[in-house]
Image (cartoon, rainbow, N blue to C red; front, top):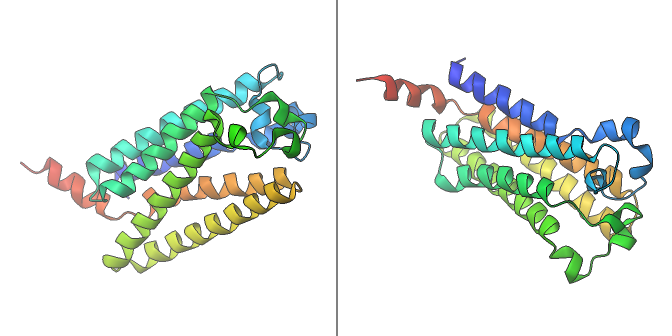
Length: 214
């Protein structure tokens, strides 16, 4: 496996792990995860909010780094790479601007009014979702055109998994039940998507060779 591809995969795995540090909440702050949004772990005043905020900030930075590497060293479309970069930037903003403190009580207390849905934190979350969706669709289409069956299959699995968990999350929010579980599987699906994208790109090797050829 080319070194640059290995680097991209390692960075993507690191980003996915940092993005999914929420299981630590059951140990460090179990009361926070009471069927509300996982983001409440980052609410100002929470004992370990700094830890989860830093993890998300680092995740965003690493994702942006991988996105820039993919842009420079692969033949992916700009839209696909842009989706990866948007996810990283939105995750970064998401962490810097925490969710409203009232969301700690429940999804109902948080509300789904325009003032809440259009808050900077929620807008960043929506942007992150749009970014990863655009990236998965773009790279999946690319692999189909290049007849990379293995890469296409893995991307299809990742894409449909993301869609299913996204629908589960929306349903849990609307029903105000199992929201923590719904968001947990969705975040895990996002992490898988981050890894699958660089892992299924055989063109990284050829582009690097071309750049090194005088």
